[in-house]
Length: 286
Image 1 (cartoon, rainbow, N blue to C red):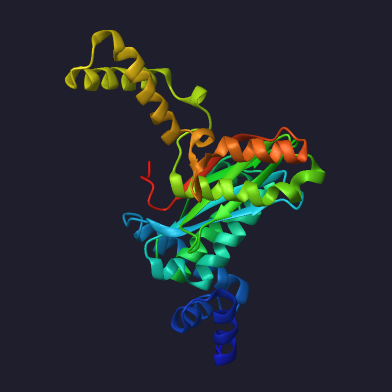
Image 2 (cartoon, one colour; image 1 turned 90 degrees about the horizontal axis):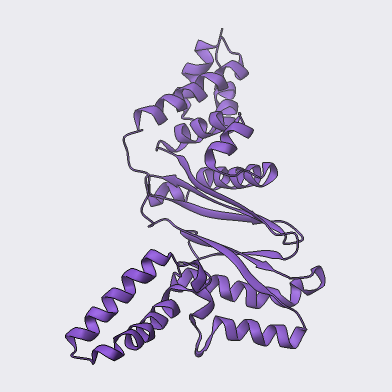
């Protein structure tokens, strides 16, 4: 069959594959465009497989929040280079992934792949288009029917936060959104480990207390004051790692708990932080 330039161009526009690859696929398929697309997708899978030993530490962190702010999902999609991460093909794929993850309430990348079988083919196709290893490394779906979920994606889409708040009535979401997002920015900037001190592992607390006592001994502090000194230093530790007790990044004289107290008093509410998730492309990969 005669493969025309128009056929090749149409296939290229639909797949984003190279002109020669499109022509070869059309020749192999006898001019059948759908079969040619399948051939190109299989080649994309081969490209992804060939590059499986490459490190994929660049990419995009992307989120989607429901219209009523009661549910959200955040996904990290990785590639090998910053150049590809900024490409339209890669960004469109990341948008496709987050839409699917939200639609099926995926609990993990593996759960998403199981619930959306066609995603495997799309993943192979985009890897073939961009010529780099492409993976969905992390995913978190959050729902809070009695509160709200707010997202923050830092400029460049390399860092993102989802934060869930309790006791935010539907009529109060708009009033709370500015503060809610500022606290999400706090998580992005100040990297807390937990929300409240009660969430810190008791083993970690015991370890920190021993270190602070040893430090006090080396400073020649009286033995009967070691516990008190160590407790004071532990409180400072909590102010570093617990979001609720951190100093607000734009007004150090106030803690996050002060901001929430002020809002609750002004709006006659009882809003509290439930949980947060923070993804940064530079986080160590498991």
